[in-house]
Length: 171
Image 1 (cartoon, one colour):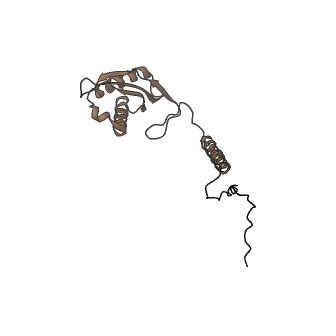
Image 2: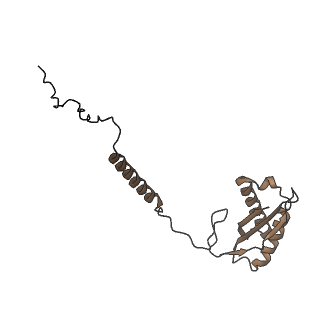
């Protein structure tokens, strides 16, 4: 026979003792705090891991800016061109400001300031024909950059390796 559970001795009018709570499967407060601490430590560790910069390749010399061909002459120079400000071809009330520099072979160019002025005049004439739609977006910017590089190379007779756009503002 099965053993019967013992009942406490109760006097008349006395309430039975409260029943023990049954585990409902819900986590306790201590389990919740422990889980929160573990997740926080893991998140902090991952953040620290991704904050460490990856090892980078050695940086090239400051004056060795790449040319479209990828090869820069050992004796190259960088010359700041005067800023170019003009209105676009369409719409007429839209203005563009270009600040650029030219990378050239220092052995073959005796007066880079004269060459920069000639290139700036040619770039000014070109920018007056450009429409706003031609400048919009990354593709438009890349096309403008290629056109400006091509004009600089033609104007200099191939002595300019690249025209580096510093700023291009359309307003």
